[in-house]
Length: 132
Image (cartoon, rainbow, N blue to C red; front, top):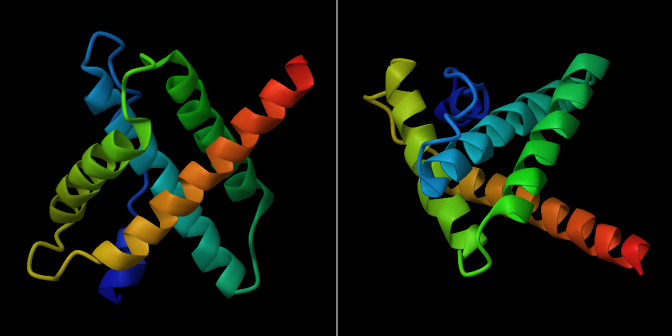
């Protein structure tokens, strides 16, 4: 399995983050979870078989990121924390899956995080527009 494909399949390996954990850790976990599901969906779509369960998991993962962003302190640079701590969690999962001798696919992973944050920003804008 190519290392890019391996990284995209790093689905959640730990339970939802402990609410008493730092906000940075919680953001890292939910972003890593979302990247894993989105990556799995991208692979399924490329193979012509994106299934409803993966699509639903992706929507739920994006919703968790959105909810955490809404609950985060306003002074938190959510995008910076999402990148730094999401990558940190994903790198740890990459090693835990046994890929420590392969380079971590930073570029595609960052692109997925960027896309995830763009989706969350669009949802936020839509929610603000609906509130007015």
